[in-house]
Length: 599
Image (cartoon, rainbow, N blue to C red):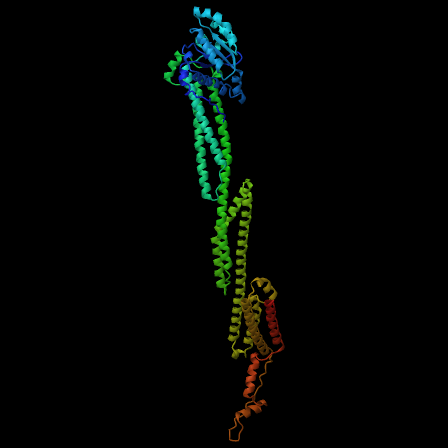
């Protein structure tokens, strides 16, 4: 913000101003030069040189800080002062010695360019006589132009009466006391504006040098503190703008200050119009600069706040990433350590329920991981300043999520396959148990009945066909399905089951062969026997066995022959061609499974 204050303040020259040694009314000469008036004041001769210099420095500095309108370019503030000044010295009621003293002080020190000095000469008879002698001397003694005016009318020929005060028969409104008060208010406003500008500059510099924290809490606290500082300074700017607008309204309409001031304004002169009032121009320019400063500060803050918000979002992202990374790593270790497969369908079902509960426990954290990935991609799409840090974390988080999902799904697939295996084993065991019970339930004493033989044969055939329920008939299909989970324990279990199936199949085939023989055995015709008269037995007569032998023409079988016949009927010790073929088939199947498992 441009410094709009004078080197010397109104408080420094307040006593000198109240004595009206010289005044700046805001009037201008025809060429636009500011007019400084030296009123007819007999005490000017007693003014010390240092006080004169201080006063004239203050008055000549005022046009340099506020002569242009805000609508004009910024360089115009110095142009009117560079044009020089026009001095009007009223000494109508004084002496020529006073005129000479004023001119000598002006000639000795004046901080600006003097275009012309108009002197209203003393009006006394004796002073007029002296003026006729001294007039030529004054014009040649000073380096600046001196014009001696005998009357006010003659002065009006050089200076427009509209630019002069009433004591010079002009029409410009001017109240010296009110001018001093308003100058004090303007300078006070300018000083506060300068203080705010310095505070703003310091705050901006400090914000620019802010080192961004590395954690969420510190970043949040930094954002809170700096936001509060921003709002405090914004409040000061708004307050100062309100004060400036109120001051500008007072300068433009001085009689609207208060009811008590209206009566005094009515009986006294007013200040010059807005277009010629330095104070109005100063306040207008300060208000414009305040607005520009506030807009620039808002623009800077918006960028800085966005940077802080991005930093806070980054710290939150990093914090949640670290937490989720640790959580998912713990889940992964827990999942990796879970290797039990179960030894029954019921146990595998329990493991499936446990892994399903584990997945439900992980569900919220997995969803958080997906949500965090989406947040990361949103930050990247919004041109976040830390894209290089966010992108790898999104990739890593997605990798962890995918690895966990794959490992979890693999665990489910393994358990489902192992459940299928255990189900096949249990079905095979149940099938073997049913076979043993079936064979045990077929009583040999009923085998003489053709109906029973046919029914038993059908039951054995149906049972052998039901072996497909075990789903252990195809070694290649079995290996393709369970190749990822074949272990020595699994191999021993399956081989044991296959051996039992083979034993039951052999037993069934033997039983089937035995029953088939009974079915194929031709029926013996019943031969009529002629009864013979009973012959008394005697010691030399034949025994019943001999009689029976004679009737049938054959000798009765021995006990060993009877046992051999029973064994032949059971079919368990004989090996006809069909039975041998089935046994070889079962052995080949077992060997195939053994080859598959040993690969």
